[in-house]
Image 1: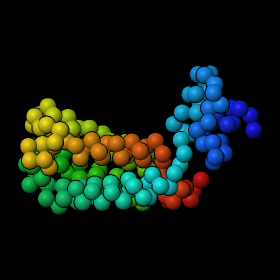
Image 2: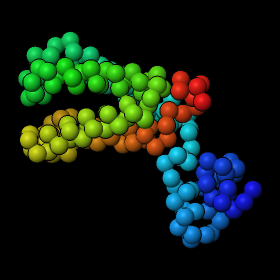
Image 3: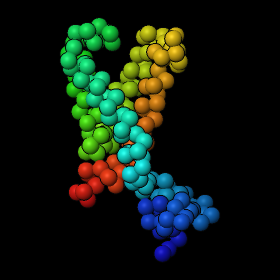
Image 4: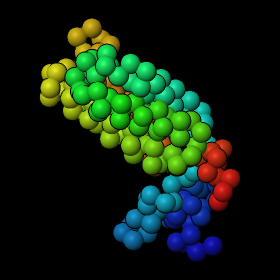
Length: 165
């Protein structure tokens, strides 16, 4: 095993997973931290993010699709935009839960949440915690961070996509 193999987490042995062997060579550090070499941990998807994110977005998307007129008034969008958001949230939530194209679903959910955060900050003038402690944009920020975990670690070893590799 070369020193370059030891510096890349995808090829490193388990006992020194993020070992950079003291080098300051920029190329090796970039290779060690690159997107494709992050560990594909089943813990990230199966035990932390997916069981929490999936049902939240599936129920939200289902509610958008079930009552688009009422929901469009709540979020101050047109009925067509509400239906589109509902379908996107429902599909992405199912993909995150099932482990099918999780990174693409995470990108879509991040974009939806960033738009929601933007609207809460600049249109509704909501503070981070909200007026009553439950209507701020802190949950949206948490969803963005959880989707970033899924985006950077992939679907994990227990996802359906891992069966086709």
